[in-house]
Amino acid sequence: MEKLVAITACPTGIAHTIMAAEALRRVAAMKGHDLRVETQGSEGVKTPLSDDDIAAAGAVILAADIQVDESRFEGKPVTRVSTARAIRDTEAVLDAAVAAASGSARAASGSAHAASGSAHAASASAHAASASAHAASASARAATPVASAPAPAASAAAPELAASPARKGLLVAVTACPTGIAHTFMAAEALTRAARAAGYEIRVETQGSVGAKNALTAEEIQKADAVIVGADTHVALDRFAGKRLLQTSVGEALKKADQVVTRALSLPEPEVAPDLGHQVAQAKAQLKEKQSGPYKHLLTGVSFMLPLVVAGGLIIALSFVFGIEAFKEPGTLPAALMQIGGQGAFTLMVPVLAGYIAYSIADRPGLTPGLVGGLLASQLNAGFLGGIVAGFLGGYVARWIRDTVRLPANLEGLKPVLVIPLLSTLVVGLLMIYVVGKPVSAIMTGLTDFLRGMGGTNAVALGALLGAMMAIDMGGPVNKAAYTFSVGLLASSTFTPMAATMAAGMVPPLGLALATVIARNRFTAQEREAGKAAAVLGAAFITEGAIPFAAQDPVRVIPAAVLGSAVTGALSMGLGCGLRAPHGGVFVLAIPNAVSPLGVYLLSIVAGTVVTALALMVLKRPVAQPVAPPPAQP
Image (tube, rainbow, N blue to C red; front, side):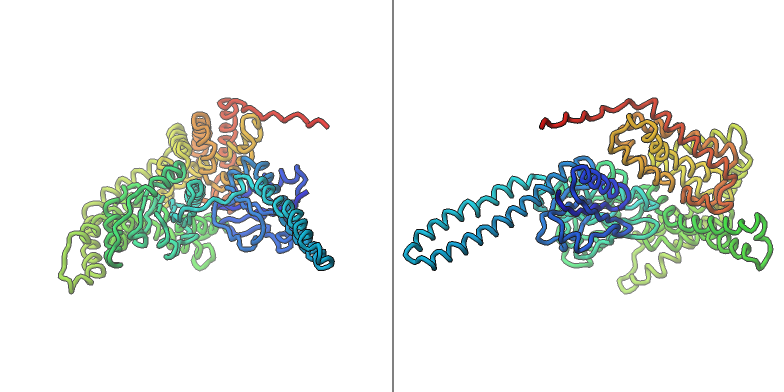
């Protein structure tokens, strides 16, 4: 039996971290080894290793896709692998660690024997000086095999798996999606694996609605060989001036991480900028050349708007705990809650959407006209559609003024604080009042009345469409389009599309998790383990939990997921379910009146989950199970 310690770590600390830890524990127990595992991730360290654990261990296993501090393992043989390798080839990883521990022990034993032989030879020499030459010769002959024995043993005990390949350099990256929950961290994990496979260290900063995590330092950026930005929202690029920079979508960074790393490293070296001012100008020029499309600008606005919608919707739902109309009584707690959620958070929803669409287009100069235009859209009853129009108007008008208006050098400082805000806000405001406001208001009113009056076949059809859109690309552009449409309608007190969208988005990972339980022979052992994580992600309304399954078998998994989500969306809309908060999954359902009616809403989620699982049972074929080797003959 060998005593070992291990650390498993991935950027999220949810799926690969836990799966690798469980795989190592299970195989170690089967082989009779004593293994202690520490897990690390975005939520910190769990089950930390003690100093005694490390001191007693013969070897260390680092199954990590992120940087791990190795200073406390000094003097211990370390086996370094990715979490994916630890999950797939667990036995080989453990065997390598055990071999490394045995080799280290033999080396230590050999050193002790050599030292003992040397002392004995010296004593014999002192006792019989006349035979000193002979004793020394004998001592040398005796010491030679003892001292040399550990070398080949250690070499044999250090297979390729245990070797720590020399790193070629450092990469830095930023990943970002509107919510910063699933795609952001999964893309970070994929880039980490791809970079290390290419022989590079990597530091990944993740950005989302909760802000930046693992923020890159100036020193790391300066040392980096290249920069990768995998984002569906606006990311400031000024700090990367003078570096090789590759911009791509978060989806491509997730699905084609190896290609993204290769492309980044193949970019030509930029010219060395003579000063900081030139570097900033160069970064802005790169940003202008690579301006992204309207979709990315829209998602940036949505990402900043989401926290307001979530907070406002849940606070409004809390006011209903005291009664559906309790907020109408002035001076009461329900009235205060409604004021906070409805008149506070929801009032800011459209201005923030418009402001950050404009910010994504024109950077800071776009913020003022976007915010003012969004507020005017709310006042003109143009709703979220008017806010989107105001955001694009504000961004493009501000950018045009910034790039075309030229002032004398001594007046250039007035441009960002006076000229751009004044002219852009004036233009956007007049356009919203005299040109955009009334037509968009009429469209928004018609859409709202249509949705509220929708019933029967129309409601079922819309629900099925929204549900299918949520599952077709599991967090991609089509999914985001359905989600953005539903979130925007919350400001108009239209809650049924949001209910259908969230329920349908939960179904793909939940259906896959159920299928891995009731149809185990259709999935590999690794997929069955991943099904546990998919269940948690699905319950939290993270559709991306189904992506690993869809990536391996898209022809069968995606149709099954689309079918189940369409059923759920159709049932939810057809039964008139409404949801006031745009995120949270089943955890939101515990809040009274956040969703109504609750019973049939849960029924629609269960129905879609079962349909997806049954469809997978029909579409997928049993996988070939590994044949156990015959028992060794005594």
